[in-house]
Length: 259
Image (cartoon, rainbow, N blue to C red; front, side, top):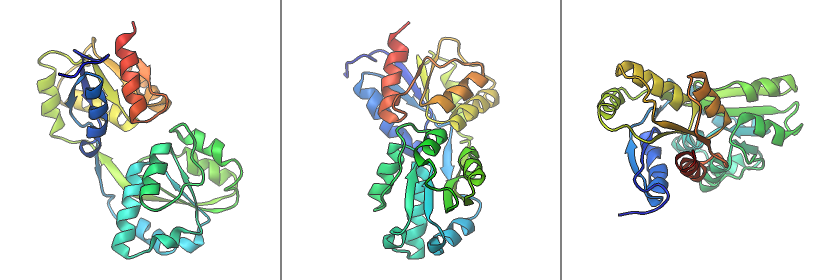
């Protein structure tokens, strides 16, 4: 049996199914028992037309901004499907929101030239400075995403094309799982890796006709996710720093071992 600072603690992991394993693995190493119930599912956008069109005409852009690992995955899959060589990206300067996204780009054979340490749009804009002012910029992101980056770049004179690389939906099968979970012993904590996961979790609670268990603590991956938790009346017990999976696991330890 694993032992560690989270021994005897039960933690709800709300990440998408294909991403939950990494966080669960980190938590298990620390002694926790994990329950994986996805509050979010990553699916293709309604159409790849905009993304495909941009990838076929990369020469028009000076910058590519990628907001998440999911966006990197979509770009790589569409690039391969369209027969576009990685070398076609060589003239682009690439900015990645977060070091995890930058690593995913590297694994795809692409190099991020700008990567802020914090996994938030505001940090990326600060890291970019005036480098993209007046440039042609391609942003690949979720179908529903914050407009902070494109709006700021527009104000700086950039021509910005925002394309949908993927969309997030609520896994309906999670409704029954949430209802069943909260009939028994309540987990000690729930982890949230995005604002969408928070919003979807509360949707799942409503659909399952459940109330948020008072004794369960919320652990947030970063300031935007924390803000969304607060908007739902739930003060996070801890916030990850850095804003990545290892940081989220470490925050879970802090959130469950401090009063």
